Image (cartoon, rainbow, N blue to C red):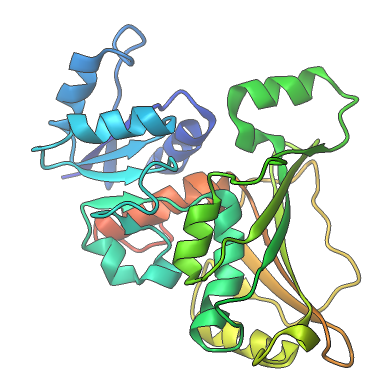
Length: 307
């Protein structure tokens, strides 16, 4: 018998891509509210108390309200919003870092943000292994396809072909920073510099490292080896041995739930650049939600993913 899944906010980009990954799978059946009821509080509450699993694809405040609606129900929740990523009682849904069993056994799982997925995949294992100091003031530079901004951002980029680059978060204090700091075990919040480019999907996240000024830091080779060990056996996260001259995002890129990590280092070991390449709608959102849902349902974590 299949488990029922209710996607609250299923008309948005993340919700639609989750539904696509679940389509045709015998293990799950979608509980779908019709257009007249999809925003109706009573209908949503009933769905939460009927479904086996729910995925919240909502703004933060709405996600908190939805979680409150589900109180007392058997439903197990994956929240794709920012609302519960550092909240007590919620498991951070990055199985490769948090632990597969921790996600599998949890009733409340919070999906990582797209940018934090790249940052944490690179930094958290190296801080844990003592190859990077926890008290360094890190910088994270990143670019994303415009789909990560939701319907309004998609419309803006598709209607204005003259936009070549959009920097934002310039007042600092971006909502992703708390999870980046907490789940990497950092003493200081990183300086986060996000931007959007005229491609629908795709993301590059970079952490530059002035190693010669960082007490106790490891070499680029040691970092690459440590990351390889951290993700050994993963079908989703790959630490690349090659050091290409360039990394490209293609406007025509197909959906992907992979995460590729690179360590670039100066010949003298004085500097390094840690780089993550992923699909902001894949491992950065919908793919991660399906991976977590699979684990919670006791299924192979890669079922339905685009690898």
